[in-house]
Length: 129
Image (cartoon, rainbow, N blue to C red; front, side):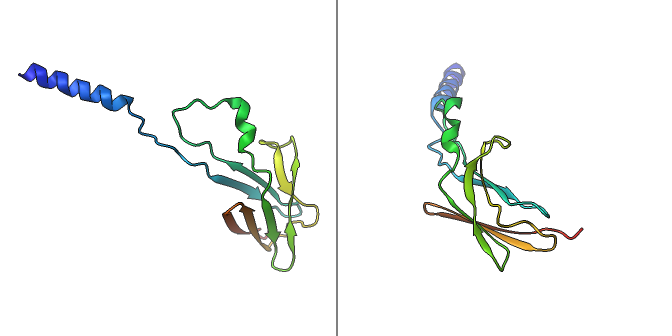
């Protein structure tokens, strides 16, 4: 009798290991950005790769770069919509930036990113030196 119980427990453990426990993960937007004293703002937008048991080819990583968002930076007085462009100095090589606003020590900046139904906001202050 104990031998049957051990075999039954092992069989259930093996069955449980083959079931997909991950489910279908949803991709989310990732916002990475900065503004420094005397420099232009830079924002990089990507999407997460969903957690899955399916194989994801590295050839399709470019599909996770967000290229059609509206990215706005405001210093409280001026508001500038950043332009998306290819720039191989960054990875991934697509950034949002502008030449119309530079960071200033002591100033506070608000970042707003809009893509489809997603809106992300962040606020930062460049410290005084």
